[in-house]
Image 1 (cartoon, rainbow, N blue to C red):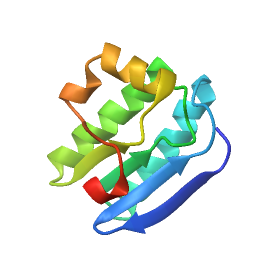
Image 2 (image 1 turned 45 degrees about the vertical axis):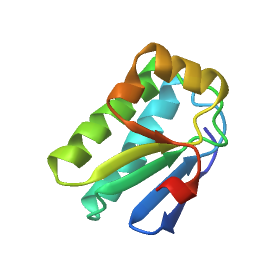
Image 3 (image 1 turned 30 degrees about the vertical axis):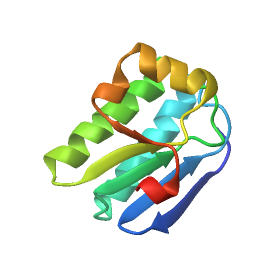
Image 4 (image 1 turned 120 degrees about the vertical axis):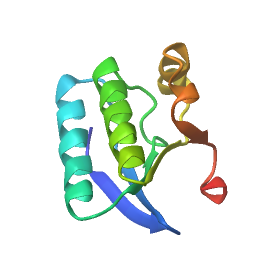
Length: 108
């Protein structure tokens, strides 16, 4: 995972991790970034995977954990632009039955 970009789209804080999320360290860095957002009061998070065509099971676990936290605290957690191997991995785990997936920012 290279640099993480953070922007705003309506009520959402959009987090765009750069590059593949295939290393265990990527999950830790993403978790730290999301924890920082939660500490600052953000509860409506969108993870934009446009630049991350590959993710590992640790990252899937991180996304599920923060989705649960957001919902428990009255927020929302969505995944944007999931594609390629990342999308296949998430569909295989049926993550799409728990977390809302959107294809464009207009769907936020």
